[in-house]
Image (cartoon, rainbow, N blue to C red; front, side, top):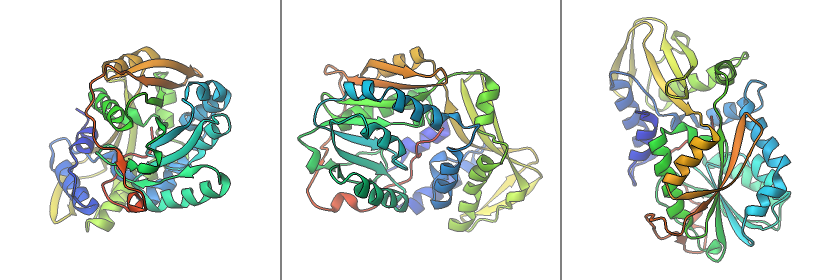
Length: 352
């Protein structure tokens, strides 16, 4: 099972980010097969490194997705309801939103949802400056957990936006849970625009996660640096090596950090023994065919509307089925600034 997805979905409301991080690190490094949830990649340094990754030649995902949004922007805008609010899950930078805004005139409000507060606010300032007529309501939240959408968008139809193939960071059964969660949050008549990476030749996939400049390796190793800083760890980054490969049987790219020698590591008041060659499994990125993803969506309350692809990557438009039973919660926050305060835990930024 994908332990990253399990940790992501077992987060409990009320835990501070620091407590949740310590709990997940101790549990993951205490396991027989060591793991760390990839949701913890994205401290400030990790967020900056990931933005660098998206510009790499090997990392086709961002380039392909922006190309699809640009080339098919009018068609994508055509499936959006009039007078809608776009809710972006794990917003990161607003580069992809900006592409949509050029052609989707029906978007009247934007709700970026992300847990990296500093990164989110820096982008919101630029967005409000560049699109003064767009109402922007940022939320610092874990998008996998129940939360309130602002009251200000209650009269607008909600459109979910989940780019970057972040859906691939979850085991398929957990991805299905997330799709149902989105349905419950967005409500009736909702549309979901989601980016999905496609199965392709293994070398192209491996190169995307192990670039020649070593930026992805630094991104992976930064997780150990974060443990050192926040949990009083003593990882020597020079004694671990980044490893990425395509697991064809599971249809996923795996990322690991491999110990170069036998060593004992201290973190969060615990000691963890590593043998030479033993790895920490830090991320999975599942790859789909167009048909396999549509089947997954169909089993979890969403009907396929349209799909656009360049052969490497795909962008899907899904419609929430009115007959689908979803767990609904109150999704309108009171007016004011309460929804702009930070809480919750980290979840993956649009990633692999």
